[in-house]
Image (cartoon, rainbow, N blue to C red; front, side):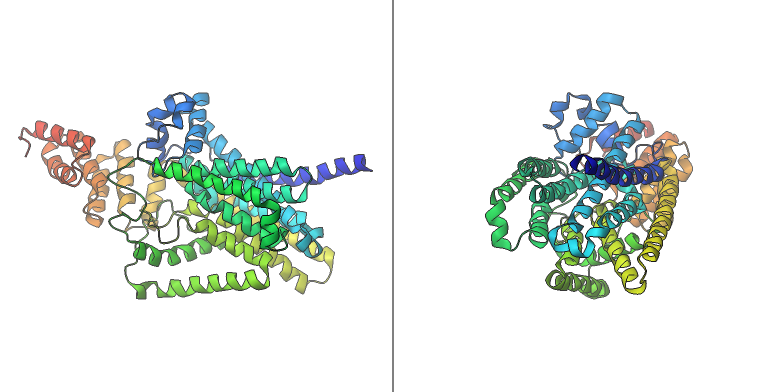
Length: 514
């Protein structure tokens, strides 16, 4: 009997995996020609550390990085060692990471719905529900920034380690090979800590998962798996080392010492950002590469979003008490977002890639909600199954189509930043980056207009001032380049590139430096 069950079990696992892989490959088949964009330049193209031996990458943080991420940099260095700067290799690895994460999500949801506490309710339907959640997540266009923007491999790779940490936990608790799976879970958590700080909440999430789905109570949890959680908690030391090794910079991108964003204003801004993330999870249009999200200064301006967020938090708290299995999905959403959506200021309040893992919770909750709705309104099981398959196919097909279309915006820096400027006309950085892309294509007059608009929106933008000066120099108009370059040098007196460009402008204009 055992020999007969094994091929059948293998088949039942294989075909969902093939469907997930097919949906992911279909959604991202046209992403391989997306060029290096924005932060890809300093992190990959112009990063000399990637040319060093792979072991040296872990010792040298890349210039301008907001935190030391040795695992991420080792993966990029491996890409460079194998294919140099051929962007297709980087996209292939990014897509492979995303597909593996989707397979882990399928396995995690299926095993969770098959645990003792949920088996009677969901056990017979667990493979179908898990497959629907994984298909929707792997094809969702909100994930394009985490997959198709090469340097944001950090987000998807951290998501992979996060899911593997939880998957190792549930396998440890439900299979005989508990030592092996415990080691896998702890190792994945450690790798995640070396990939991106978003992993910081993984030990807490694992404990919450264990208490809700596996253990009888907190005492039983720590009595049986105290050593396991000691191992998970020890990975915080690696995260602390990564944060402490972050190089000092004149323009930090995170922390309580940011000049233009205080902890209070950042906290007031985040409710609106979180609600926007949820809207995009349910209706992913329009998607924007760089929001330049405005910071809210006054409490009264944040009140509508605060009330909405309070309602969601209240619903999560109620569900954790009355329906813990559903409440866990709310906890997942908020806990994963906590490092980027709390009182710790980040230079940019909103980026779509931060929804990579929280989106999994939203999608799973939507699948379970629709299934419960069918259960209450449709009495015949075959009809429910037909409706479920049809609705899932329609939803996945629609998401795949939107994801494929989204890649058209990524095909060049000009198209990406043009779309961003149309969506966020008050985003000074978008205007400046569009100007850079136009200047590199030779459209210097149009590029100059973009730089001027960026300076109007943000007069202290060193990048826009510097790029305007360079554009004027390339047009052989040094007298018009001096003023923006002098202003940029005043704002960034230690920037060698700005000082060199100013010297060139003054020399060509035959004026002595001030």
